[in-house]
Image 1 (cartoon, helix red, strand yellow):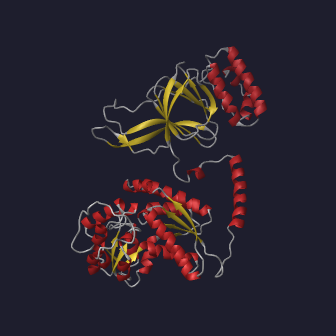
Image 2 (image 1 turned 120 degrees about the vertical axis):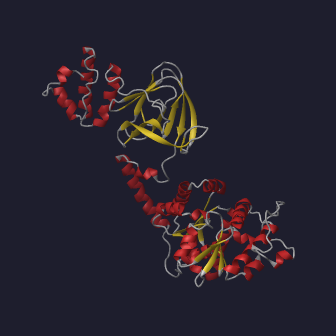
Image 3 (image 1 turned 30 degrees about the horizontal axis):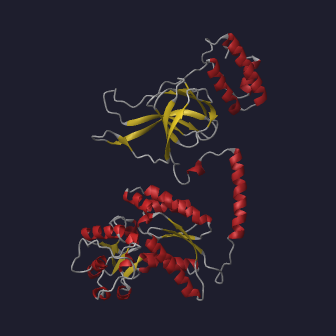
Length: 513
């Protein structure tokens, strides 16, 4: 703070500050009054003597006193809001970024590229949001050292505010400016109002980068110690709680079901798995199973938007919960969300728990078949789908239905079957049945007055079986359209993926494979 003193290499003060690991801040020294410089030097001597060799503890008073005495008032300038003053349209929204490395906070700049335009102007990619807060602060607002409670974007509506980090680097923000704050760990920052007037601002909370983002954050020593103790305790409890007999005489392995997509087919999974265990073991035996059931509306919304990474995050969340419950294998009770991006996210989340893939279970049952028709939603029944690729890897030729019929089946699945509606007209459009011709109702579901959009003279299954050796029902709800007579008539040529998937779970649970 006093250049005449600090310039002397042998100065005890300089050595003391260097021993404490602090950086000398000569900013604004020439204009600092002598009495303030002496006070600052004395304070640093006392603090360094008590703090010892710890730069982290010394940096805070350095920044605070430099602001108090007028040294290093503001190293940065006001944020520049994106504009087209250079003559061309902007390509990105630039924002000041307050971040941390787990110990120290620092400033940088982050850019959000524009990806679309038109009459409404340029827009960035959609940013996920966990909530919005509207805030007012008093004109005397002066918040000392603190961390951000979450990742968030702050938009200032009026007034001016100043924020400082431990290095002494300071930024000021005015009306209309935005700030990305991510220093949720470490030393944090100081914030104070400059105008003396009440200030309005908007806080937009951002989610973590992914379901496991917290694992990759830099932990403190205390957090590492607590995590180690918790891991040892959890391992000991798990070893006691989950220890079960093994071998032929042991209990069935515990199966985890990721369901609710839709609830009707999830119920069928549960029923079939328990029936398979009881059929083999007899008596009152049943499967050990744990169900994680989703709100299907939220997942279907992500499917329609092609946001498969977010679907994967949801599957990973379910997989972690089921693994923590002691499940030794997982099943996703839905074809569409086996999309390669979402499925791989689930596998990465639980690397030590096998996830039984529905297409593999189906392909194993198609032994001896050569040409198979694939039915399902638009995400499953297409040339490049995960399901078609896995069947081709087994040497099978995959045939798809006509585009108009595929579109109608996709509508039928999402608009009716996923909400447990089975219309007589829809079932007759899909499969010919003597029982329906006689006027009897399907095996379950409720009748709706919605008329069929298209009723061809011949049902879809019969048309496809003329050209193929087998038909794969690549949607777990499609079996709802088959009554008992149709199931018996098409045994061996129509393969229900849900039934085959549940059978694979039974074999795993009973250690048959």
